[in-house]
Length: 233
Image (cartoon, rainbow, N blue to C red; front, top):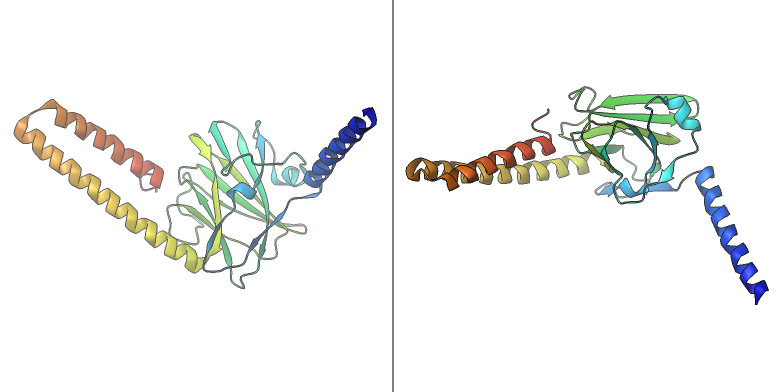
């Protein structure tokens, strides 16, 4: 009986050791195959929180402290830390692949593409307007190098920080962007109509309840503009 317990403990320790070795040796390769689709890769990212914000990309490449994100979307409260994300991608779609990062309230998003000893970097973010963006979008779009060994993301924000990452072809992202713009336009139009209606009711009835509705709608409009990126672009 004691021998069986010891064997179980030994097996458990071996499993933990194998898991640790897997994390040290690398991470799973994300495969993008259907050029008409957009693939969410947020849950596949490995992350490292640089609390000092002093690491450079050379140090990050050698860093062994990356861990798999525990949620579908890497998320942090209001933090002064720099968040680094790492992923490996195989593009089998025979078409150039692009990376989309949201939300647009992120202050700095820098993509590093590592191929052998060569490192290419591209920086976007709410502090840098649309400089370098390959697609007109409220989110941040990067063109990916099919030959890159690894991709690293450096993300900083003074607001609540969470990272949604997707990959797709240019046509797939264009289609998605147009659909979202249309839906957001319809939503904004409805909110403005309700605002004008309540403004009319307040003007004719002079009741405070309509003023409260108006203030609530103003907050809603400001929040929508901020989160969608229209208020910071």
